[in-house]
Length: 437
Ligand SMILES: Cc1ncc(COP(=O)(O)O)c(C=O)c1O
Image (tube, rainbow, N blue to C red; front, side):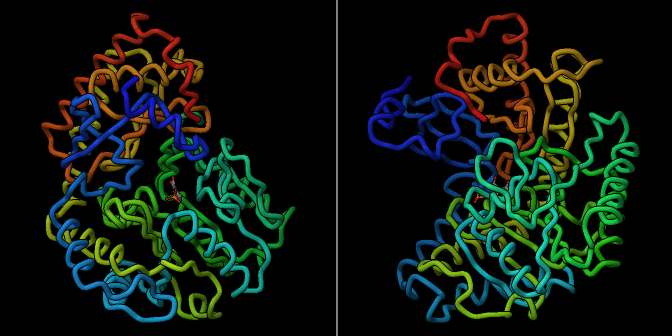
């Protein structure tokens, strides 16, 4: 354990910690972090996708520097500021027509989803919300209340109903997964809940923390058709996989649907805290002083977000995510041919997941091996975390700027890590302090 990591334990609370290995960093550039012991770490997590342009990106640095050199206040609560207006105008141009109304700004995916959950009920007068089992929409009381991830300890909202997210790997085929999930939804509408009491359906276009589950073709189109029939608003939570990460700007584009409300976060600020909700005017303007925190709409974070969006567009980073993602995915599929631990490789662009299993026929989750693999990868110089309702899915959310040679370098490290874990060369005692989730 490095000096910084040990010191942190004496001063910083562990309540927000989700640790997989003793990572302690003092700097970073591009896709690399600098550990406090001087090691270079290739970052395939990008702080859970928040460092969307990598570390110390010049466009973000310049935008923040400009915004702080002539600071237009620190909030949009009681004053307009130019950065927020420019950012809102930009975001409105990036969503489907039906969502093109107004933009609300927050600090995080959590406060954004919490705001949406309160707002849709208040604005429509409908008391119920649908979301998916395994969904992670945030860590505040109100966002946990509409989530379905088993690692969370919060209480679910009284009006929440969770429905199964189709899992193509578990169900054998995407078609079987889709049919089962849709049948479940139809049964719910017919027997348990009046659909006209449902204000909104929260969806993740790829269910990331639940295990990087990719919806079967046509699944969300069928969900959309049901939502339209019953006047249910579709909320697309793009917090982790949106903004170019999936290889398209909006991850819901892979499903060909047009959500009513779009939620952005994480990578929007390129490492600074900012989130946004974009939706129809009648809903977004239904009340004033409804959801606010003092430094919401901070022009420094808004300027960073604008620089992120401009960089994604100018440097064609969605295309890069698609291209580099293909290299990464092909490499992971090649590893799957040599490592029996790998049960499934899935995802879009640079939002990829690798499910590790004890035996391929039974698909038993290889939970300990997953924890050992990310630990070993860290020892070898690669930062990679895991997700999934059974804690057995390696998650790949590297910076959108990742190059093909960086992708190959990470694959080589992962190859070695999997080899070492399979050979029993990684000491299980290392995991004692790292429960992950
Ligand atoms: C899909 C999704 N929505 C919302 C959130 C919450 O975002 P934050 O932790 O930035 O509040 C997360 C975080 O993992 C997420 O993956």
